[in-house]
Length: 267
Image (tube, rainbow, N blue to C red; front, side, top):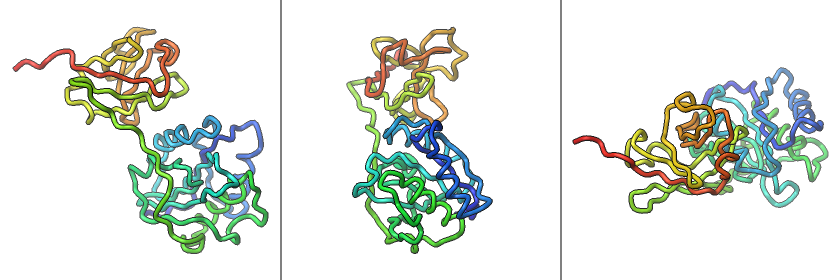
């Protein structure tokens, strides 16, 4: 893995109204002056580990090798859940053992993982409610400074791993599911191109009783019309041009998505 450990990203559900994000940045810059700290998002819905996982999947692969990615969406803060560091081929991941890195680790499996237990590498006083400031921010700073993993704590080989359901089949129909809704109201599914046994241009997608075709981009349909397309993460998405599919179709997370062939190729 490359050594570009002057870059730290932050992903949290803290919002920006309060001083929580600022406190984390202050700790990082105090312990590792000159570090570039980049915000991925702080608008993850409170305690929504899945929303954070999707945000990380969308953004982290585009950062330089060696980046330290910190994610703090931590429903179990102050309890028995562990604080972990994952070292992958490309980067370091720092955060609670909540499954928040599950989608990233599918793409870039960990080479090594350790539990953060060395109190000397945390702030002197560790709050039961703000490990982002007292545990995870100092950890990121010490990684930037080159502190080796073995100093943080023991290696681990078990951690919380969340997984998306795989699409199913009902005869000739592929049955997917909406797994995420973005801020535009687009419905992201668990279906990828490889799940379709037929060409995308030959199918109909149905959500909430509304049928639509798969198009390359939003511009291929009229304003207000529904469509399906493979989005920037490679997942099939259902959208409404210049509108919200969530509102127009009355659909959200958990909604089933049916994909069927509508025509056969000429022989």
